[in-house]
Figure 1 (cartoon, rainbow, N blue to C red):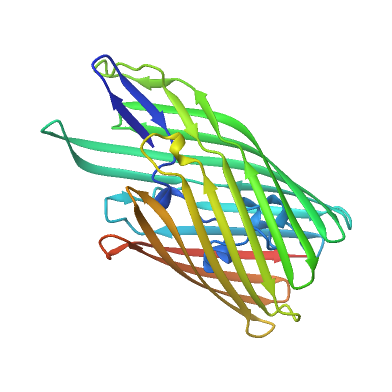
Figure 2 (figure 1 turned 120 degrees about the vertical axis):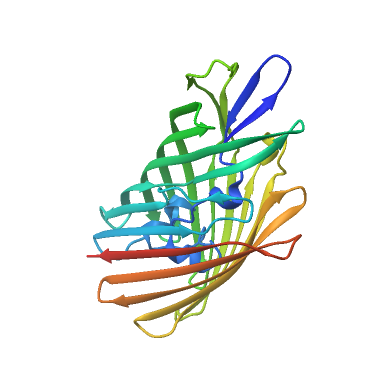
Length: 328
């Protein structure tokens, strides 16, 4: 998003992913079905966007792809084309794994009639990111540590007159500890940044000064409780981001709950709940449901998310997530 801060001398543009409750793409069909949880899970390569140390494939290779389909929100936010991921992983040996992934972390657009200073104007903006991740995981007995090297491309446009983009290399580190078979705890950290860059515009009415991008530090902490046969799992995650780094947004402090049950060797069922801040003490509540069909080394994963505005009590938007994987 490009936000304009208006003064007598200039328009100051800031590029960010706010509003995150809509722009965030949940890139794993498995995670989406169980409340966007999985910081302390292990296995599927699609979970690395929550924590790089979750990568723990059973065989030598794994590939995975997923796509989000979002409806328009109540305040005219809508999905743009990009909302998908594709990832692969390779187990080098018992202790080391490596992967490669393309993931579209944030994307949205808006076309709306806005009101400012007793005047109406047409406001249109788009925002998208494209991240290329290389996760590397080391495992020793009950301990796994992982690191993502993220090369991300950020792009935004404002009212079709001002456009900006830049590349950023961002490290991410995570760990998963499993002291007993029935319990694990995980955590990940990705640093925030502020980056100056140039905007391009052909309209002289815009006086561009100090354009920059601002992104918060992010910390995710999670736990997973499992039955001894590993058929049933309960997950709880806490996601924090110092969003007050942007003067107009409260810090993100969200708790996520998830449940997964393996019905038989071919079917899994999931459900969950979480909330996201909408600002001004307003939240969006999400109910999630998901399922997987597993046959030999193939898997097909589906998830649905339904959201509601905490103040109005009305539906905000819904998400359908489609995914598929193959391990060999």
